[in-house]
Length: 250
Image 1 (spheres, rainbow, N blue to C red):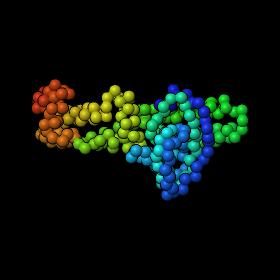
Image 2: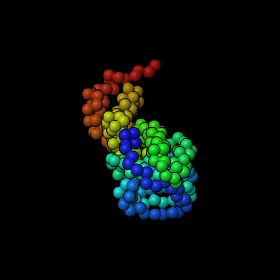
Image 3: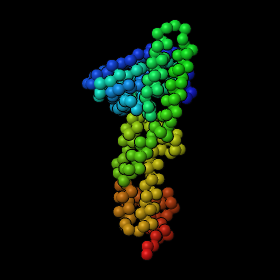
Image 4: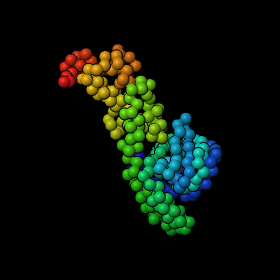
C-alpha cells in the first residue's frame, strides 16, 4: 500500500494531546493523515469498524471520509497530513510497528524542518523514509499474522467469521480480505476449510472418533456438510479415507 505512492504535499505536521474520555467526530477529512502514538491509546470508528492507535500501531487516516474517535488512554499523538496522487485508502488503516521511537524521532525532525522555508526536499525525503520503514514493518503477511493465529486456535468454531478475523488485525473486513487473498492466493474461508480438512485427516487416520464427532471437532456444522466438503477436497469420503489411512497402534 505504501511502497508505490507519490506524495504531492505535506500540508501539516502537529502533535495532538488526547485525554482519556475524549470523543470527537471528524467530517470529510481534507487530507490523508499518518498518526503515531508517543503514549496513550485512541480508538477510531469508521463504518462500524474499530481501529486502535497505540505505541505498536500507527494509523493512516482516510481523505474524504468521516469517522469518530475515542480516547481510551491519555496520550500524545504526532500527526502528518499529506496528499498523494492516487487513492491510498478509504478507511482507517492500522500499521503495526515493532518500535515507535525511531518514527517519533523522524517526526520531530520533519516537524522542525517544516517550521522554516526552503526545506521541502529534505522534508519529503524524511517522509518517504518513514513510509518505507512502515511498509517494511507492516508487510501484508505480518499485518494478518494475528488473524492466522486466531484462526488456527478457533477453527473448531462453526460460526467463525471474516469480521472476527479482521478485528484481530484492526482492519476493515473488506481490506482484510484483500490483503489475505493477496498473501495466500485464497480467501480466508478457503484457508479455514483447508485447516479443517487437514485436521479431519489426522483424526480419521487415528480412528478414535466417529465421523460425526470428527465433523464437530473440525468446525463443521453437521456431518453432511463435512462429508460433502471432505470428498470435494480429497476425492474420498471420510469412511474411505479412514479405511485407507488408518494408523494401527501396537
